[in-house]
Length: 305
Image (tube, rainbow, N blue to C red):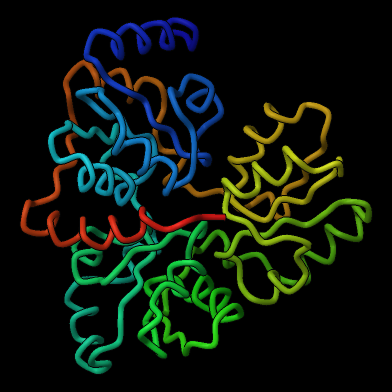
């Protein structure tokens, strides 16, 4: 079946099954193009909580589908490729977090949504790159915060708070590969371009940024900007959306190798098969879900960038 036929079959199945297709900004272009909604982790979690569809097909990675299951326990959540994971999320476990909490009694835990459901369940509140600063500022009764699992997001957040931010030694391999030397090279090649960096980038790259934004923040910033040339310091999948929304503007990847392998695992055939067989289903155990939901709900109640 060709791409055109697959897309037609997919739309037919989505209608028949009363399903919604949620697609992360880093997914393949042909999947973004057919999505009911595209967005970042937080935006898609919010949409998942609102949908009237019976089935949520989540084109992203495992922790995102888990988050959809957490906020929508009465829905069937499908992740078309079960092996689509997140290296950063695998850098922390609930057991290791419980041990760390014993070393830091009374210190609130802020966990990035890029974490397993069991870790969210051991956390006080979740955050994303879009609202991490607001989340930490909201914890007015604490002078010290533990942020997991992304050290770069924690170090970025530390710049905007007087609180002491203790961080987990996790990172996104694709964002963390972006060095200051690479940024300088691209900026020298494109001297008129603004450099937009994601908070998951290492501090040396953040220091050279004109703006630091989540993926949703980048999309919004570029849409409103009078500037026409941008260096994009995040996973290259977002450039497809940027070009689609802003055909008269120019986008240059900060590093062409910033490609998340897991985000590219899902293809159109996988989505069609997921709807045909209603599998693989992602379902968070109820005891974990209830505890994780508290942390997610606290996050969803706060503003974002």
